[in-house]
Length: 100
Image 1 (cartoon, rainbow, N blue to C red):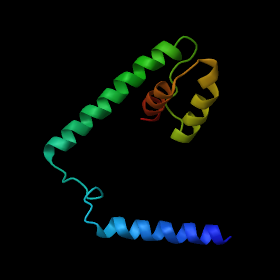
Image 2: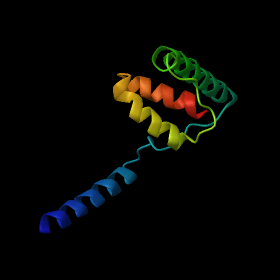
Image 3: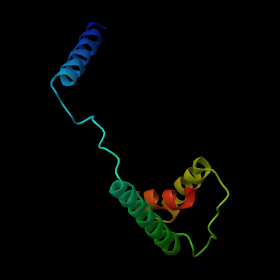
Image 4: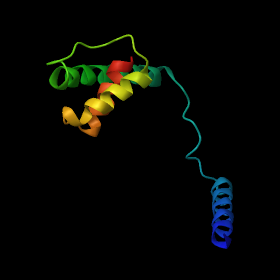
């Protein structure tokens, strides 16, 4: 119990020190027209890559379901992960593709 209290105090002190050390890592970058365009490029890349991985891993047996919530799709992908031998990267792309 005493260790837990000391550990909690150390965490609070460490967090406070990081706040006052002048760290700018938590400052959000300004949103510009270029960053919105680059975000669209990233989204498009994820969709293309997700579609490709769906065709390679899932399309042999399934048609792409489109009317399910992201939560249900995550459950389905997790169930098929072992059976289809999906990697973590495959899973991320597939979830993005099936949820958008």
